[in-house]
Amino acid sequence: MDDRNTLLKEIGEVSFFLDDLRLYLDTHPLEEKAMDLYQQHHQKRMELLKSYADKFEPLTCHCIDLASNNSPDSDTRYAGRKHWTWSDGPIPWDTAANACHTAGILKGGA
Image (cartoon, rainbow, N blue to C red):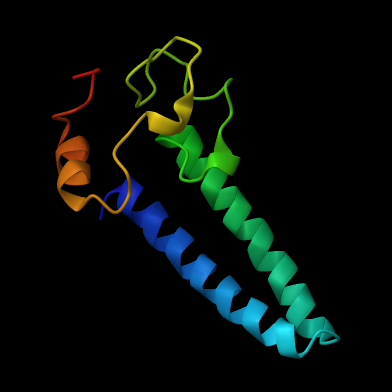
């Protein structure tokens, strides 16, 4: 599994856990252990999202950083230029586009 897919898998797993934990906290709002777990995993998710955005493209609009993905060697359509990074790469759920992207077919601004 390549780095892109590994990160997407990790983000999906921690996001699923957070969704379940949030549902639990909706009915158990005073459960300190659950709140601590939520905070820990929320931080992990934020780190994973930042890592993914830094290496590839932002997964959510909250990950957009106009100063990121601008180096000449970054995996983006507009490497080295300040740009709106939301539309840099294939959407994660488009498996055909991601397969081409991972294989290098779309790299280099094609």
